[in-house]
Image 1 (cartoon, rainbow over the protein chains, first blue to last red):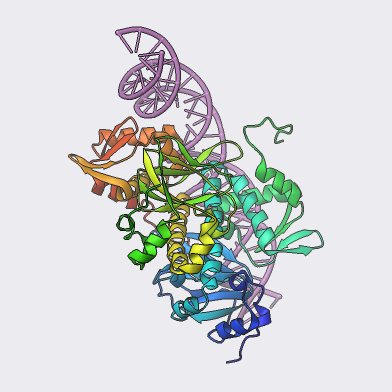
Image 2 (image 1 turned 180 degrees about the vertical axis):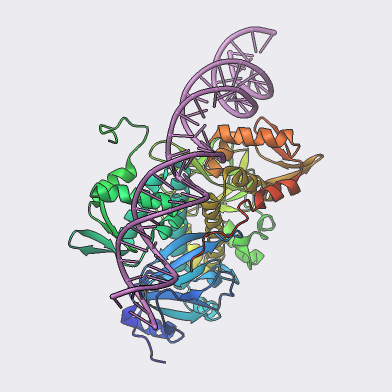
Length: 240
Length: 240
DNA sequence: CGTCGTTGTTGCGCCAACGCAAAGTTCCGC
DNA sequence: GCGGAACTTTGCGTTGGCGCAACAACGACG
């Protein structure tokens, strides 16, 4: 088991304020593991054996309802932590994590967490900040789902994905991992049919460019306007 | 300014694992403040001068959209912390907190947080657990809003309120603070009209008993069945 | 290079829930 | 105890988006 180079992770929020010495200490407990595209990292309900930092690739977290419907909780980008159930006192993972692309993660056995926190209290405060911002984001999502209609929610979702995991390409910004209409539906609380209709509409207006599991934002600014449009206001343009 | 008796708060999750000695130390920094019904404790966007523990009463946290619509983020019950923006690294309150009933809170200046955490690291881990469960609850809410229709969401909301803040009365369980149809609409992402229709229906079926800002659950079990009912019995969409 | 599974598109009918409107009820201050 | 404000109920017309269904396009794999 090769030791991980501290410089790889020194800049991550989780390790803010740590020196190389301490980092090595922490990294000594971790293993790096590779997951192939579409393979599960862990499953909802499993006991939370490890917690993770994503080094490379992308991971999707989903929850499944008793009825079997899936909802995408979030997409994990490189540098982010996930699977921290143990840290927040859950014995089991509350969601399923799947690599949506070939991915590399650092994994710590959950059992090491208490010891690490005892030795490095900053880990707790750093994690607190991370979980805190996730709570904010989730609240924002609740507010959106409560007050906005589907088209605006989808616009927001795309813009967020682009911001988090966008890659500049010739004609705009491409979301740099495979993502289906179904995925977007599960992020925004709608159906793949409705998403497909909306994206088709945007494509014909030149706002985006689609493809199989692929989306390029050609006019992010126009999308943004669409996302922020206050419906109560009298808009200068009516839909043709 | 009277000192607060440690025994009042020793059992709270925030102070789990603390001794009387340490508690006194922490409580020395707090003031207790009373808020009259319908008065604001703090407003969204204000800077986060304090963090709070609710001792008595009930507090509602809401977010307001640019368009002016309000969404209820949560109801705070006695013993819970709120306004912990500072702890999660936010300079400003992300939501408005309003006393929905005459309430008494303990308030610590936010500036004391870093010092308290440095001295008592358990505060950070306790808060991490609290914020973690709130994140879980919010995710559950997202899943519900994504997959269930309004009636079931309202049923879930009432059951949750009853569990958190229900008071046993002669004919069932009464939600023990004033709550309007509008509030419930803002919790479930619907309109007060729809909530009113649903509650009227339930009332005529004997499931609940309503009144101005007042709800009694007469048949919690039937409500529960309603909330959990799997309507679309067939195989849902699965990811292969 | 043909076949098959997966993903995306689109037309159509329908209904849950919204929005508006108006009236009824309860509470509070003066 | 009168008047008005806040809350609730209910009817009615409209509609956004769902569900079904059929098809088309793409990619993988033998």
